[in-house]
Amino acid sequence: MDINYKDKIRITEFDALRLEQLIYAAQTRKGICPWHARLRLLLDTAEVVASEKIGADTVTMNAKVLIGDKVNREQVRASLVFPTSSLHDNDEINVSVLSPLGLSILGQKIGYEIEGRLKLINMVYQPEAAGDFEV
Image: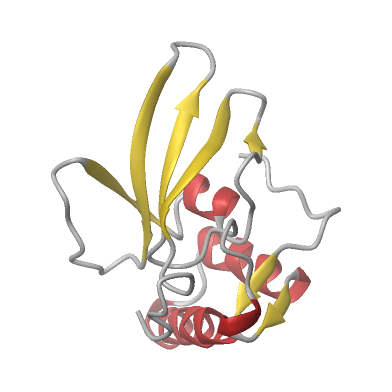
């Protein structure tokens, strides 16, 4: 997994709060695992902005994006979700924010490439752009 920290990512205040709660809950239950530690680092290095100020091309929680695989030329629609989310659509996959892919795309913009193979092609739905500030 390649998380690029040289360019600050942007995360909404609402997402940051819920992600902080996720880390806190994990710490009180069983101690922090490597994925929670990576999320902690990501949050510590991110620029936190009001939901109304996030760009419509930025991946936020519950956003739906089209991801392309440059090697096999396939595309998949994916939703960035919390680990316990029940969001489901038959035409897409759920990507946990604690997964390597989830940690790689949170706060990134359309056009971002992951390890030279995967690329964020299109924003299908972003809650903030749709005016859904508490999704």
